[in-house]
Length: 133
Ligand code: TYC
Image 1 (cartoon, rainbow, N blue to C red):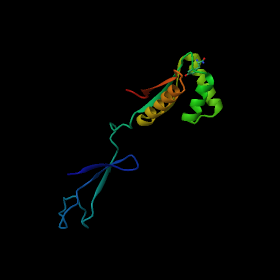
Image 2: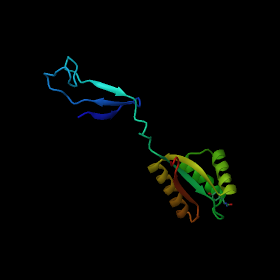
Image 3: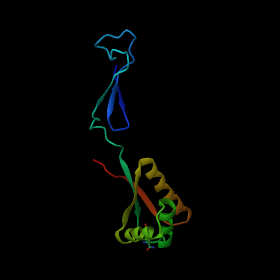
């Protein structure tokens, strides 16, 4: 039975079963007995895994400096970027602060929420699928 296989170039390959040494002309081997690999275009229905947004939510109590600190600590932003994003959340109510694979997005969101709770602030983040279709 042929086995589907993805290679490093986005092409799918069909690798045929290892054949017996006395192969005939219509087997999966060439005349030397080597395994034949056929390449075909990657299946367009094979989608990359979905990505997830980490969304920061505004509240009326968390100090602006603490929000900037959180963005620098968990999202590795420099001060200017962290301050701009904090102000965007402050003025609009929420903003996307990063897009990641699911596990990483969930871990970062939990880190923010736990750290805020430890410091007795109501700051919250949430995770939402990015490219849902
Ligand atoms: N609105 C808060 C204040 O005025 C600051 C703030 C900004 C809180 C962003 C949360 O995600 C937030 N102190």
